[in-house]
Length: 295
Image (cartoon, rainbow, N blue to C red; front, side, top):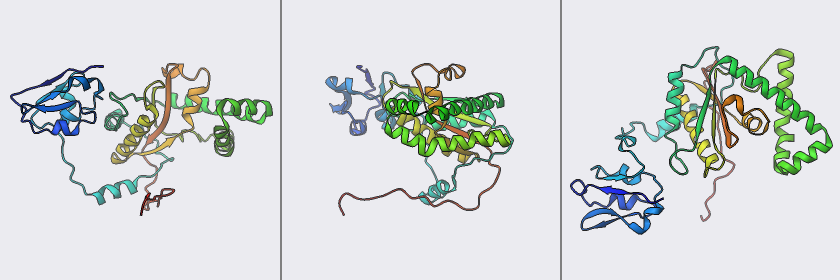
């Protein structure tokens, strides 16, 4: 799509910053002022880099609002402070019986919207469940759905069908990880009434997007990560749930109760709540490997 660029000649200083930051070289300097290169405007990503870097507010791009570019407040923490904050975050699965106020959930969503996006505007949407009856219903649906899946996998013929339909990699993950967990979770509920899926959390955020959107899964994961960090800053605990999306995405009748369409794909879930316990030590985490191609 061709975008219209408006450059205020009175404000433009011709410093070329907008030209330098444009990833698609849509802009150029001519006669001491910035302007669009007509043959390249169709390549515009609507990333807003040009508007964000111009201190003189001289440029406007069709499809972008200046209201979406507030002045930055420079951070005051050091790299060491940030790393300490990251080290304090850990998965929380034991929560206080205390609702999370919606103003905090709104803050989490606002912070999540600051995450990088594959292509603007954001393709990720967030569905928030913060009513006990809705969370209990979903937990019951998860127990029922995964219970059926357990029965299917025990049948050699149905197991083969699942393998052919979902692939060997998915089948391997199901047999070695997922199904072992859900079998135990269902048993815990039958014996002690414990919720091993949502852990009794007072809120669940489901990050979803249209499955035909470009890079929608990568974008949703980044949004969820930002939400997780904002929750940490607000004194809340979180845990990423990968066991919820597959059932909602694939089990018949699971989408409608949550207002999800056929093309809505739930990428990841995030439970949120006030931690029941305070941790005094971090957990050392390491990547599988870090290497440089050349020494």
